[in-house]
Image 1 (cartoon, helix red, strand yellow):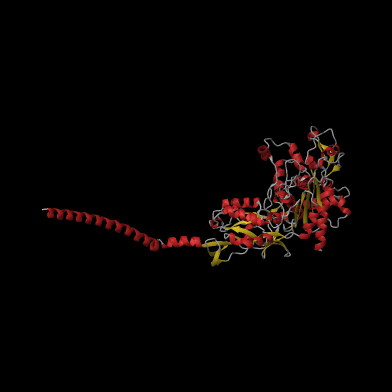
Image 2: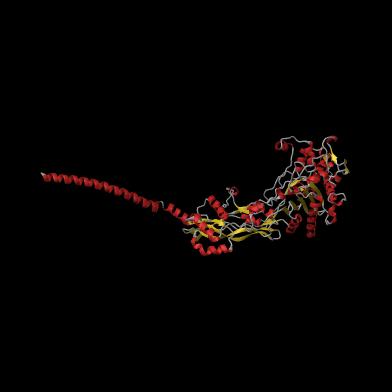
Length: 614
């Protein structure tokens, strides 16, 4: 009986063992199947994915940026070139302890705190995992030598050659060529195929900015294999970039130097252009600056340029807003003749002041006792304010605004430089919106002598005066004469064919007499001038004369005590006649006298240009 019971127990135990074995087998089989599936998935099904990820860590594509196009003069002389400098770079994601590495580099190479702060700002903006970022540019020979000795300590750090912009002529063409700087997010056009790395340089002002797309070329790339520290192992493929194009300026180096020397560091501007083509031959804004400091290819503090009270970065030639003063009188006179409000023989009596309807405020002329009996020609020659006060009361601001707009006042000229101003050509609507007042006759009187709300840039004035030189045809001004082998085309922007030829001729004769007539405001030019030129002087008031009890001379004595309150000196002219080749505008801030300060500069430029052309 006991044997039967023992057999039953053994049979029961065996069955339980079988159940447990089957469960264990199924469990092992399940885990085995999962493991086998994962092996198949990793080695076969997902092999492309992990190969790709491996390649992303091992194989990278590095953009190749072509050397920036050169900026040259028309004779081939290089103005701006690319020079090779050495930069210290690092791959942050391949650096185990970035802070320690930077501290060691600082101690060993003598890096400055501000350089490291600039690097950290760059680092915070990067979105590319394996970017090689510049820590500091323009390494010295001593820094290069020190790094070479201990470079094994920093496997993710290397020295790389890079091209930097260098202006061979220093500040002479600074406002024309401009300078380059690190690209900002706002300057990147996402629609372009060209992808700027945030460490690259882009044109910031001048030709460098305006012709950025032309100078930079097209982007290429290299496909390379790297090691664990980001060092290049081998190159796998290369796509050659499109080279940047060379640009040839229309500017005349000797004329530019002469204009710059004539200004002698005084605040102001000189613009000289060929009225028959629009090509600019000289464009000087004073004071100027060294582009190489901003290009980081010359020692010097950028901060000193930025905080300079003289504003050397400001391009007065195209961005300055100045009252045109008496240089506007020829245009107002031409309007009066066109509108038949006056003719060339119309006379008035200039007693030194003018009153509307013979009463109220006295609008004073620059000459205390007046110019006597004057017509339009004499009023231009001697610059009679009172004649134009009279004329202004017969015109409207709307007719003046519409007429001057045809000469380019109040709108950009379209010059191929960045940051050009529109100037200000006021009308009724503008005054109501900007000042909240209606337009008064007194406002029109002020505009008639180029004062009041009206303002323009020296370049705008040069374009307007060129229309007199060409008898009504105005070309878009430009500083680039050629791109590679392709010449830039001249473009007519205004054609004033509603003015009779005889009016142009009489206006020119009057402007010639400004210099040749013994009572002309620029008669002093005959003492040394070689070429016959047509011109007009101007003296732009900065501070209004308001004390009716004082004479003009007496009130000026107080005003001129502070230099910043002194009048601007202006002169516009063209020549040599009868076939003018150069239009010149000169503005000397706080120079006071257009005839003695600005006019001689223009005469010397035209004489020099004509003499050399002959």
